[in-house]
Image (cartoon, rainbow over all chains, first blue to last red; front, top):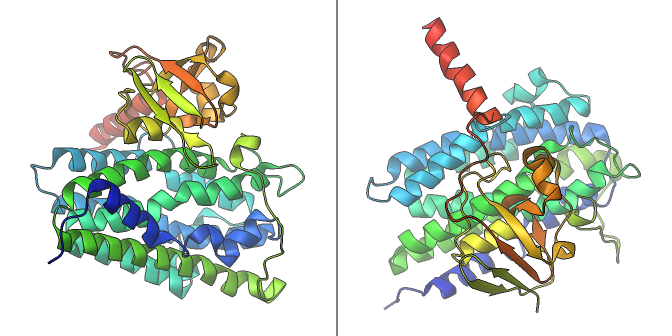
Length: 254
Length: 120
């Protein structure tokens, strides 16, 4: 009979569930981080990304409603996360639209759901379904650990080349969406881990959390790869990693 | 291995791995007691005084520069905005609150809610 994993074992299992399927390693992310993309590719990325992250507060609201009143820490975290997405400063989707406009897109194009590809629609639907149907600890594992906690590792590779005058050459203001999420999602991800560790307190719940973290990482990887296949491959062909190509961590340019 | 010493709570954390780590994330994970509220460099609740090891910290980001202003030159950093890759010692006032209640966030909320009331 399965036993409850210790916090350390459980955390390691959650981290391992993402290994080998992290979105930072998908073709679109690698092409981005190594300076291969053009502004019109970023425009298409923003038009898709909006429909994945735009409803993030909606996803969290479903989880919030499924969380018992006795789990005050989890409810407070979810509410704080929603607040930061929407109200604490510039609305995060407005920062995304600002970037899209710098890439030649427009608010109208970004907000129009007809401009997202099929995989983005699938990722959005998976987020809604998971948030709505799963136990709150499992849904938190999926959306916060499996998806949101990956963000710093992705953007820490993508941001430096965005603001590098010899790279893509965006201004700090145009690319604020990325810099903001490098730091804020460190904290959101950590709090997500803590909530999952505390509230997934049976072997079944723990296993379910591990499975959805794996599913979430797969979904984000597939979404990111689909962006390359749909918008970049017609220009650059199949993605081939160049041996020895690296890029600086964000701290080098922050 | 590099280590972060949180003097106010007496906690010490040894860093593993090669990547720089976010100071507030470490503090939360290891329950080091740094006060915090938001995670966006907005409220300033998580400001810490860097007593040693300033050279082991990432350069201040845009939001941190805007939020801390003169405090930055006095040795303060926002834990949520700062990455660490070497030995550091930090301290803080355990009762500290956000930097001010007239922040941009507060102003924005006032605009939203008062605007909603006006049009209701």
